[in-house]
Image 1 (spheres, helix red, strand yellow):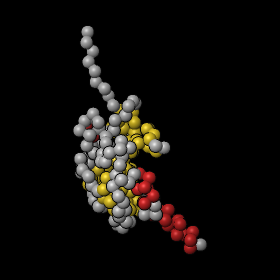
Image 2: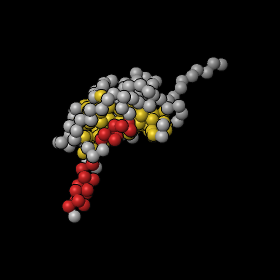
Image 3: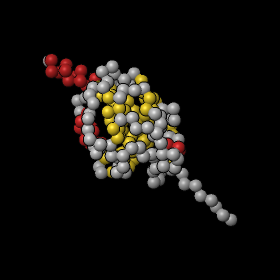
Length: 169
C-alpha cells in the first residue's frame, strides 16, 4: 500500500504545472516574424511564475512536431541548468545550450519549408542540476531528467513562412 501511495504521489508531483507566457506572442497564436529565420532569429522573451518551491533548475525544449528529424520532432532550442528565474530574456543563453536538430548550438527560429507549423516551448522544473556536457541532445537530456521533473509548462505558437515576391507586368 505504501508503495502504491508513493507512486501516486510521484505522478502528482510530476504533473504540477506553472505559468509560462511570452510578451512576443500569446499561447496558440502566431510567433512574430522577428523571432524566426525571416527576421532577427532571436529567441522570444519567456516569462515564468509559480514553479514549485523545490525547483533547483529549469530545462527548456523548443520543438516542431510537424517535422520529424532522426525519429523525433525537430528541435529548435534545448537549454538546461537554467537557474529558477521569472524571465528568460530575448536573444539570451540562460543556461547550458545543447545541440539542436540543425547541428548547431543555441536558438534557431521557426523556418518551415511549407505550411503552418506548431512550435512548442516546454519548460520543466527539476529538483536537481543536470550537469550534462554541451554535446548533449534531447534524448540524453530527457534521460537525465527522469525522476527529477517536479513541474512542467508549455507555450505553443504557430508560424508559416511567407515568401515575398514581386510581379512584373
